[in-house]
Picture 1: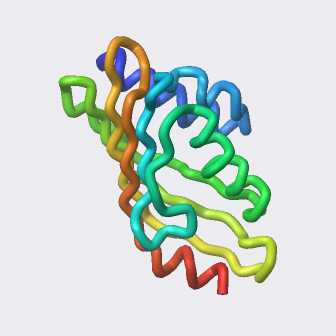
Picture 2: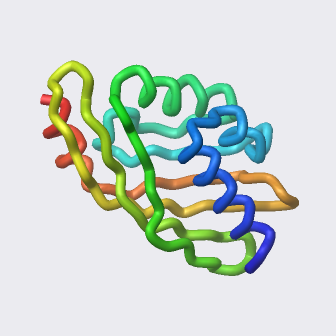
Length: 130
């Protein structure tokens, strides 16, 4: 597999360990991280600090046991990697759980993650929150 594939795989492994520093370590200084419209944290976050505070820390605070478990990684070449998997977790305020499929499209250049775009069923995520 490519270097890009290995970098994305290591990000998911860090996530699985709960290693926030390891998750953001390979991010480029100007990473553009896009959460899908309709998702609770929708928007584009620029830079590791915005991703950490706007996405990862909020997920940790608001969800119990939130996980993003890839079933498959596809090396698309030219620094593109696609992750296909399942989100799961329990929203703390409602006590409702969710299990939702996702697709993540990653961009890696010169050993750094430069882009991320999320695709998921936002309705199922929001249903757990209501």
